[in-house]
Image 1 (spheres, helix red, strand yellow):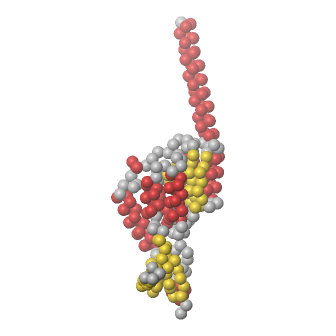
Image 2 (cartoon, one colour; image 1 turned 45 degrees about the vertical axis):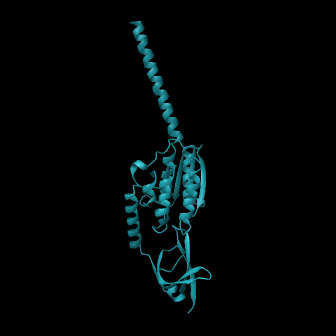
Image 3 (cartoon, helix red, strand yellow; image 1 turned 180 degrees about the vertical axis):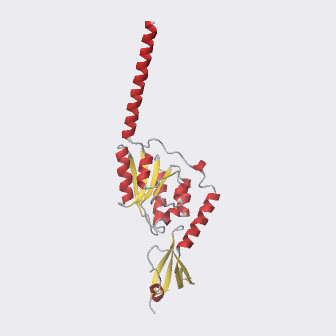
Length: 256
């Protein structure tokens, strides 16, 4: 029987392990095996001392079901909450008008377009430091975490982590324990803008601000220049009226 070789990757530890599996075993999988899929493998380990290499010979492969994923996420959420990572008092306030904004998002993504376009419409002088990374798949956690650590050293005023919608499996990197801990240690305020309103990756709970969508994030990180100009105009008009009323009162007193 023919065999195939797979690479099993641990996204937390950035560790990979070769797996040898019978082609018929792969062909029988439902749903079909795909890159980035989470699986459970039963088999034996073969170690070659001369080469110092380790390999798994698979006897059974099973996709991790949605129920198992939800249970794992619930357990992780409970664990991190017990450590205090989600406490309100840990959250940092965002500045009213950030001078420099960090943005971590997918390469040439709709999320990046939405954040940049809406932010610039609201405040044209907004200055961005952008890192385009993988936002799903086996490399997403490593790339997002590395970008976060890099931007956190640049003395930015706020960092937005943005991604458009997707399946629960697509959004799993943003519930990864290593990434959540990296966000909790960041010195810069972090905005989570992942998916749609109904999506709640664990990043939402540890971030300093949770935005329902990338567009919502853009509306919440900068004020609207049009609204602020109107506020200034209203204040000026109010001050004029106050001064005018005060002068009228003084004239009345003088006439008396």
